[in-house]
Image 1: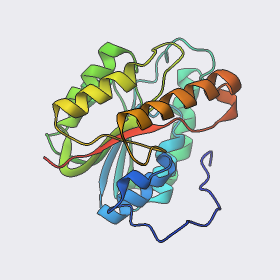
Image 2: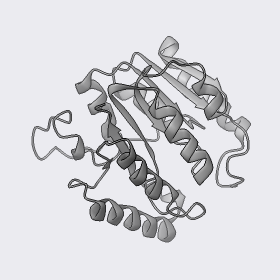
Image 3: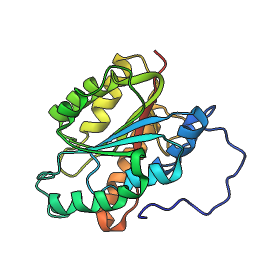
Length: 224
């Protein structure tokens, strides 16, 4: 498995449900899932399946939908060819049996399969350009249950998309009246969130994707 939890001992006995801002990376999200008792989740933008595999291995989710179009992925040669990614994803997830459901669909098309407030946990890692990301925010937020998790990957200044994710998630959280969290930014002021985004961007430019450090995630615990 690509993702490995830290072997370091926690500083204290943390309740992630009471302190959701304590998530240092998306590797902590299974702790939120289990403390809240969330059962049904979806990852939109699964690609080769590493994070879906991690979620299923590390949490008590009863079912996780893993959605991807498995076609040209941003035209970037650093990613697997789409067919290879789909095959790799299937290999990773088949061991979970009925807990795992793969769907080859565009994000919007996949959303049509589910009623509003269907999911306890939604994680977006699909299109990061402004048009697709705006559509995903508006579409999938409605599919999140009250008291559920709505979040996604790459809260940072991206090489191609710029600060799209940072800018739009900040605005969206304000529009829906929800508190926005970012992994690694415990006090969650805009200044702290943006500092995390910029520091991560500088690491990206210095080390590149092959370093496999984890990009920050943004997330909302929907309370209304």
